[in-house]
Amino acid sequence: MSDLPNCPACASEFSYDDGLQYVCPECGYEWSRVAGEEGEDDLSSVRDANGNILIDGDSVTVIKDLKVKGSSLIVKVGTKVKNIRLVDGDHDIDCKIDGIGPMKLKSEFVKKA
Image (cartoon, rainbow, N blue to C red; front, side):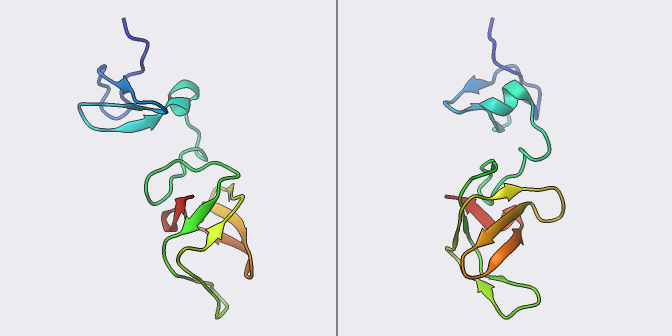
């Protein structure tokens, strides 16, 4: 008998281990092994533009030019942001960007570096 968890999306019992994650061959859903063992909370389910799970302390890269509200500054594509902090709210990420200062970013505009 298999010790692998059932798929959280479709409840299929045919999931398999693919290194750092589990995969469901029926619906194609992929989920983290850590999430499958410990259960996900709201902050660990923050994902970048490519679907990778973000955690506190990760480094990310901006994938789109972002205007800074109340300023003429622009965060350019490819800007690397180190040591992010995940927060609740409409913006998922608190960070500090060199040359700009403290910022709040949405996870949909970054990718894990």
